[in-house]
Image (tube, rainbow, N blue to C red; front, side, top):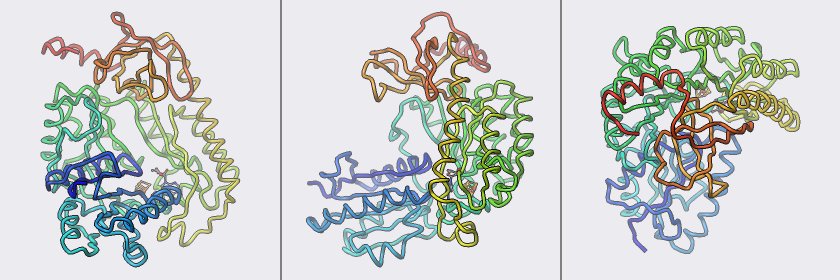
Length: 465
Ligand code: 5AD
Ligand code: SF4
């Protein structure tokens, strides 16, 4: 067994997955080698998530299971990284002696050094300060999992006061990356074959407020839109409070910016929104949606909801249900409220909604969303859509999967692996709530808003598909 092989397991959101790419980059730059076989690795790293108790429970289970490996083989190095390392550093050090490295959310820029230190000293190493964030890592662009798609971090941390949320505690205050650093990274990704990027941040549309005056997401989008090879540009996750007229105008003016917009409301009740300290009412949320729809009529929206926030009545819950119908979200992510120690809602409000009521409300939100999604998907049948092919379908060998410009999942019959990473037209022949079934089409195609400009550009520059 090679002392330098590491195995990295990732839990949680897209930000964590991207952080893991950077962690792997840094480890490789430090002379380590990645393996996807846990049993052959001598270094086991877990990049963790604290957003809800259920997420943490999964990780605790895994940490417990690693104890047996350490007992058999004391030379193995075990590292806990990310949100749970930040949040539970004392507990991990005091109660989990089989953990060698505790590396917080702003320290993985030197993860290789921490691992080396622990190997040399055979002592526990803890780093949970503000040492080195992702910008200390020169990203190995080839490290990403998908050839044509990449995520790019633009702002870390969160300054918002949402009363239920642990993120500001685990990830610290907002820090935006300079425009030049982002552009340089995107250019390298594009040179390596990327045509679709997703800009990431916990409050992605707060980007730039800590940088030079005038720097914001609108400006960054305009910059990146100048790269002709980029066919799709999206960004997550936005906060309704920072959906400025400037940003909306930029989105409308830039056709290759995604027409699928994830704008979490969390609740449809102004009373609950106030208790959550979200900073807007139902009416203001709806007004923002209307503003954007008036600029971009075919814009699609997606949402997050929390079911069973403390004090949520049946009437409040009905208002969340009706928000789904009123906006007509194409997708909603629904979570049962989970009290997180140290947050305002956990410390000052009683978690008063019984588990079965939370579960029912959760189900009802999903059901209403399913009906809305199904109706919207059915309207697509007969249309030809362009999809970016992602790879073979997980369930059926004779099918491949791709996504439309509005982030809809499409399965289609195909056995040609060379289509992966390419944009192909498919005719939608069947609709389900969570996906579409399509058939590959070679010639005729219906263009969606924005694609015509790109096609014009492609013809001018002679770029092949
Ligand atoms: N309980 C349940 N859901 C939560 N989220 C954030 N904190 C909590 C919590 N304590 C949800 C929000 C957020 C998404 C990423 O997770 O909906 O948008
Ligand atoms: Fe959490 Fe609110 Fe920040 Fe989102 S905006 S990460 S929900 S505190």
